[in-house]
Image 1 (cartoon, rainbow, N blue to C red):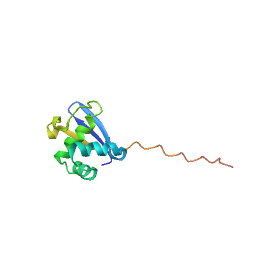
Image 2: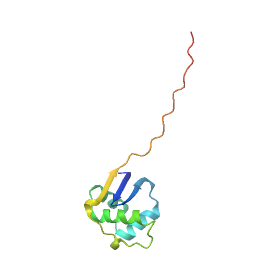
Image 3: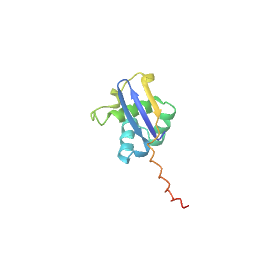
Length: 100
């Protein structure tokens, strides 16, 4: 799931695994104890540790002191939706002049 729309109650975020930086991977590992591969696989299988880590990661920019153990939520209120990245408009075919 490269790009996901995430919502939990009145909060929403976008998570794009293709945009993760190495410092993000280190932060996820330091917080969850999971390497990036198992963390991302856990999102696909709804692993509770991955889901908690995802919410922590998404909330972290607004709450830099947030600890993983402080992230608690009702599991089925968390909504993960695969999102399609914005597509670039196709280049228009050049119009050839019509000659009589």
